[in-house]
Length: 573
Image 1 (cartoon, rainbow, N blue to C red):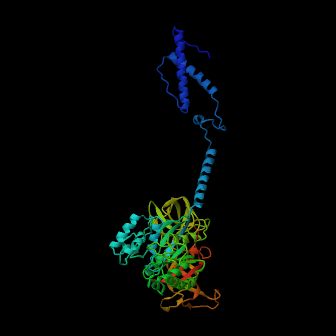
Image 2 (cartoon, one colour):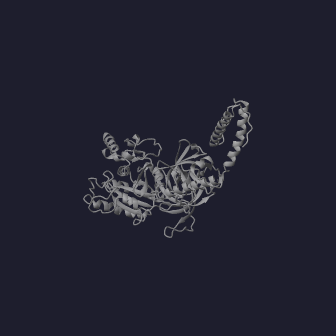
């Protein structure tokens, strides 16, 4: 490289100055390259000769640097980490592909975790008032580690102060002071739990609301639904049973208590009939209070109860050999609940414990790929609108767009909570709290259904049903114009029978040709039912959970039935 320079008399000094300036300029260029091309400010207070020399050398050095550094090859992967930092390669297509792969891997991991998750069962405790349902539920929570000894001691002290020493286990379930009061409350607040120990509503051991609690065994996650036993709160029992997969019928072995619940008007009979109607296909009959002094683990008393219950269970539609199992237990002492009892306690019983029976029960078939259906049992406001219910069909994910029927309001899923845990997705059978946007909580009522937009649940004001008349009030006749309260999944609505279509022959189970004007107790009939407001129902053959119902009037169940056809169904989104 040739450079023409005008310099002072001393040539050596000028050459040294040029070399120093060249080194400085090279360092500045290297620094600029490392900082992604951000230049360094050069001082301008040099003499004109020096500036001319430096500018010329700058141009030459830049040429040399550009010649010595090869152009980056976008197809060639960097050889080491430093080179990757100095020469980043941005390929939008590859970045997009990588993000898609990561998302797919994440979804696959979530699906695998869901597949490996313990199966889930909803267990409803039913039976006559004071049979010991809440005490058994409290004992289950204690034995499964949901409640510690300090809490038990606290409940024992509270129960003793109220002269209710034997109720301390029920206090685990009944956390509200009103529930523990002696008198029947005039107004019952509707609230469903949300803690491990559950918040249940009871009065003097008499549950008035359906409460919930959660516990796990080695193979299964369970949700306890503690249904009320008092006859004044049968509608709440219906709400609990409609969410259940299996039922636990609690019977008191104490002298006089079994007879009170079993005789006409007792809740043992009505609860069994309602449970079968509401889809509880498996029943565990626990004969409680076997440790009572009037019983003292008597085999004769146990056999007496079983012999009376079996014919009634058969008449209610249960296969007593396949779908029903009897167990003697003590809810207060925890005997035969988590492990089989000692033969010294009960020498004549060698069967499984209550937990072993629950673990062995088969999960009812569910369709995770069907159209999404979640009847809403409750709603509240919490950073948006939150709805609660049990998924009866299909699956739900965060970000899903769904529709609330029958008012056809579109909603987007923001968050899903299952047993207090936030989850990305959930399948059928799960009890969920779902936070949604696009609809206000005041626009939602119990009985509305969160549904898929592709195939929403039908909304009707009229449908055809097959009814089984159980017991009409005062031997009344059942005819067109008869009014009652309809209970179907979470819907409670006044209805009217507008037409009797045909009577069913009880022997052949086929419709009779003779036209009818009325029927009496025990008859089976096909009729047309009308409601004043649109409700979400399905044909029983399509969705049994949304197609079975009960009719009640004046606090009594008069008929059970199933939907066979829909009239003027509206399901378009």
